[in-house]
Length: 168
Image (cartoon, rainbow, N blue to C red):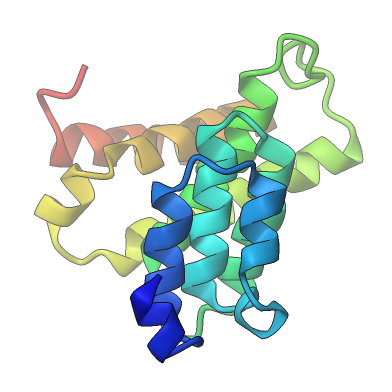
């Protein structure tokens, strides 16, 4: 908080403050000046906290803001959004995806998941870095399977096996 008193637009300080707080999310959002909320690092922190607290819709909104404002194309932001969207379907027992009844909205979301996770994986040229994020490959494969794109799903699974052969 001292850092923010000296520099009220220090995005890293807001990110740390957000992620280390136990305050309700709406209170956290109000502590961040409006002009800072569209910063990708701040929006990522808000999305991460919402996801950690089980609010996938709010997490998705903030993570989308982070992706939209990420001038540096950080793969972790795309990967986090992709996994959040997928888990909002696969983690919900009432989801139409779980009973294989895709509508246009869920189909579009799953295609976006594949795009996000594929771009995030492609941005990592180092297999060691990708190994730490093997769930991106696995989740892209799940989204592809749900869409009926078995060949693309097999590609992601093969790549996951290649970079993390010991991953369960």
